[in-house]
Image 1 (tube, rainbow, N blue to C red):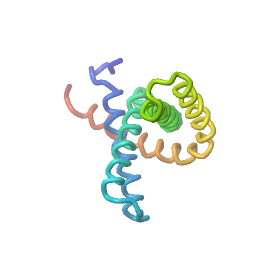
Image 2 (cartoon, rainbow, N blue to C red; image 1 turned 90 degrees about the vertical axis):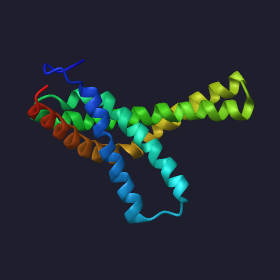
Image 3 (cartoon, rainbow, N blue to C red; image 1 turned 135 degrees about the vertical axis):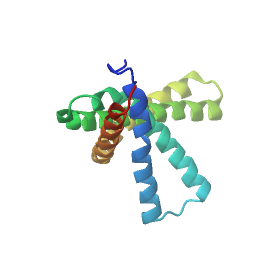
Length: 152
């Protein structure tokens, strides 16, 4: 789906997903961590992947009228939770395959277990997801405004 000016809102949404990643990196820097630099880099890479996926999913919500900023915020928050749950299930399947080869019961258990855990974990993730959604919405709105001011 492209905008009337021919630009893709999903692409801008994905790029705007880097802003919540930078917020989380700032939290690591300010709050400190006992993780090694490699572990922090790996964590931030996964955060960027999740944040950009959520931005790609919610991108069209940010290209509406300014009054849709709240809708874009909530849409990004939901997309962030869905992306986190999806990557968690994928990781669970990978772990099950690595541990038990191709045991279908272990793989099914990993899928169901991670999905249920992700649903329960959504209760704890909702407030941070909304906060990151607000940051993303402002960034996506800024990219949309910036791209509208340039010729196509």
